[in-house]
Picture (tube, rainbow, N blue to C red):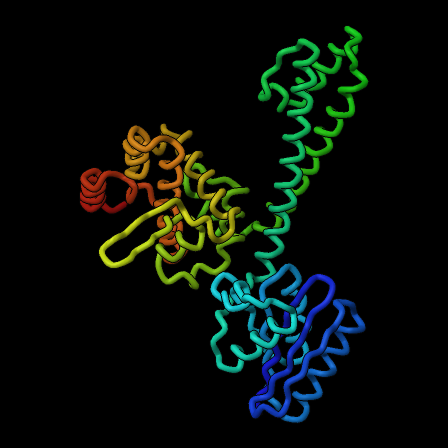
Length: 366
């Protein structure tokens, strides 16, 4: 006998609907998200498991789903994590309550019709936390630098934002203010805050480097001109397993770099990119493209860069960078699928590549 358990999970509590296959059991329960209630829910699950029921649990993907899933699987009960973007029955319900959502999840779970979402591996989750922490620290440092820049302008001191990147320059500006009696005491806390934030950023980057040391995927991604430790680690963390993407188009769609398409009868309309999927992955791919643009001495002959230059004249910088990032996602997909480093010869013009391969074929063996 099968038991389908629908769970509407929230931060402070979760509502459960128990639905038996034969219809004899159909009941609601509510639990708080604290240890004692988790244990009570686990005991109730064991009650059915020990009596030979085939129990399955369905739950939407939320912030605490990973913890919930680990607790339930510890009892020996499989958990289906729902892809909320594809499960509009709950999201767009006219009458939306916790009890109704839990019952709907249990019903679709029983019929095997829940669109499943895959949670990333614990290693990728740890990398994501480090990357998010670094992002918060960097943004905080930028915000304080902007405050410092505005303060200096109000004092009649013009400094570019780039000049405040240097710790030595910030200390020099502070000393000048103190000497001239221009409210140096108001600037010193800002300077010290920036110093502390930058030290914390370096500390997080050190831990991140230790975590990805020897990681094959990160090493492959760093062979791309313009990709460094942060961008390579971000792509690795938010890609997780490249094998789950059957094509490069699916990978680009996962990164949110494909346009919206509305097709009806003979009419097709294309809009802006979907921006679905992790924005961190999309941003990392864009940053690699910008890195390739800055390394024109190395990347100038690549087809992806010649197309970038041609498209930029017609479409402008913004659309061109996104389109190039979409092409780069194809390169990343092939690299990770074949477990091969970046090959510059494949990026060259086809005629140049053919000549290079012919020359390599006639080279005498060492």
